[in-house]
Every structure is written in C-alpha cells, then in structure tokens.
Image 1 (tube, rainbow, N blue to C red):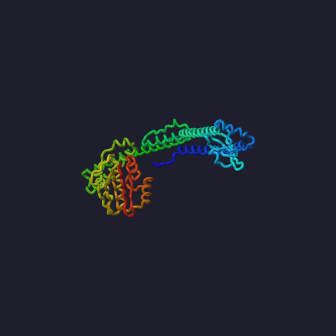
Image 2: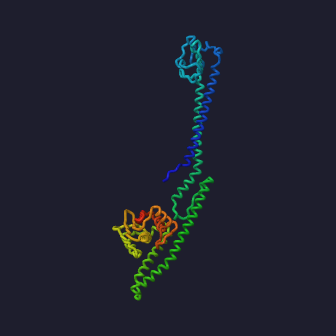
Image 3: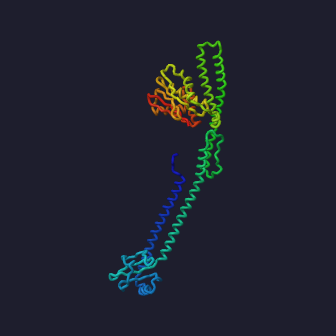
Length: 420
C-alpha cells in the first residue's frame, strides 16, 4: 500500500508548531523586556547617592538580625567583611545573586580602592516572577492542548466521513446491486459534495454494468437457438445414408466450429451472471484431458504452415471452473499462438499453478507487446475467430486469475495463464 502523508496529522502538527513558535517568540520578547526593565529599575533604585541612605543604621540592623532586612550594606573602608558570594563581582549592578538561600540584586562601588556593596533582597520578587512564568507556561500548554483538540475534532468531521466512505467502497464489488453511500452522518458541505459526486458515479457505473449484463444475456440467448438448430441439422446430415463420404470431413469441421461457437455463447451467458451464481456452475476440470481435445480442434489452423503443436502437460492439472470458460480461454490462447507462428513449434506445458503456451513465432519487443495487447484489450481489435483478449481478461478477473505475456523479438511469445 502506498504510504502518503496524513493531512489531518500535518495540519494539527502545523498548528501546534505555529502555537509553540508564537509562544516562544512572545515569551522571549517578554523575558528580554522584563530583564531590561529590571535592570533599569535596579539602576534607578540602587544608583541613588549613598548619602540618601542611613548606611550606618542599615549596617547596625544587619549585625542584629540579618534575616529581617531587605537592604544590606558592606564597606571595606570600615573594615566590614564582605561575603564571598558578593566579593567577586566587579563595579556595577548585578542581578539574581544568591546568598544564604536568598536572592539579591547588588550594586558594587569602589572608594579608596576598596569595595562598597549595597544588596537588596529580591527573593519575594523572584518568587512572584517564577509564578508568573509558570502560569504563562501552563496557559501555553493548555492553549496547545485546546488547539490540538479543536483542530483534530473539526478536521475529523471533514475527513472521517471521507475515510468511512473509502472504507465502504473498498468492501464493495461491481457485481453488487444498489450500492448506496450513507450520507446521513456528513455535516459539512465539502464532504457532502464529494460523497454525492461519488454516489452519482457509482449509480452510473451500476447502470452501465446492468446494461452490459442484459446485453450479454440477450445476445447469448438469441444466438443459442440458431446454433442449436445448426448442430441438430449437421448431426442429421452426418448420419444420413445419402450424405456423400467426401462431404463428411467438411461436416465434421463445421460441427467442431459450431460447438466452439456454442461454448462461446455459454461463456457469454456465464459472464452475464454474478460471481456467486457463477460459482454454482463450477466443476472439476482436468486440463490433462482437455488440452489434447483442444489441440485436435485447432490442428486444421496449421494447414499451410510448418507448425507443430507439442502437448507437454504430462500429469493431472485440475481446477474448479465452469468447463466452457476454461475451454474458451485456453483455446483462444492456442489460436493466437497458431496465428502468430508461421514456422516452428508451439509448446503447451505446466509449471506450478500455471499453464504456458509458447510459440516460436515472430515475437515482439516489450514496448510493442505492451502496445499490441493494450490496444486489443481496449479496442477489441481482434481479427481471430476467438473471443479476444478483452473477454479473456474479463474471465480472469471473475476468477482472480492473471494473464501475462513474455516476448522476445524473432524468438516468439509465451502466454502465461496463472490460476489463483
């Protein structure tokens, strides 16, 4: 089965990808803006002249209880011991510095080549920032799930009826009557238009098939009566005392050809029936016994040619099929081989579940062979007395057989009839 991209899957993935990309872009933009604004805020807050702060009071409070102060002041000029977490920073503003399980923003300055550090506890601010980011992330995930759910379900309302329609059609066969597509569950205009067009096409196809069945049946019945009359008259002449002996071979030939025509008519009647009814007429046929009779009926076509027909089927070859059909198929292939061969041999042999008819005739290239049989199958352009490739293919299609040809220029052609 050909693997093709899933439209619904691609659309959903595209929407999710677009949402992720948009969320990332918006989030990145918000993050950069937030960081820039934070930097400006800290510069404005911590950039005020130190004279505006009661630094001695801040230092005294730190010495009393460092856990309850949002501001910390360290000055090496007054022999303050700067924590190691702060001492490595250069002059400037530094954000998100961790110290004693707290988060600080610090401003580092120098006086008399000694550092002065003012630290602002922003732990609660960072927590609130985390909550905002977490909430935004949850909202983004929820949006993606919601978009995925809506897109999947809405596309399902459009695509599922089409998939159901395709599944229903795959189980149908052309021989079934009154094929009806269920359109009651289709809710969207596009799906309804497509299913309506398919239903109209199916109805036209059914009408065509019905006409074809009626044609086969009518023609076959119309032909069967005169052919039966001819066979009866020939049988009377063959056994009549006044019939000259020199005429008998000609009557025998007429009888054989008429019998072939009768089998062809029976074949047309079989093809006008559906598959189940056709199976009722099947019986076991052994080609080991049938092929010699077919060769005898067609030996007259070799007159004027240096052609020898070799029957290499040397063991039973049994299949279940209406006898008339298999006789018509194999006889037609044998007749084609005789017509394509002016000199040499025609071999009929078996291989596994295959009957092969090989002639040493003209042969054709692969392109010429394909063109020849395609045109005969489509146009019915067959000058032989047989039923032609189109009806052989129709019989093969009825029973699931396959008919193929292999040919080499100037080396002949092999017709391969493979039974299922």
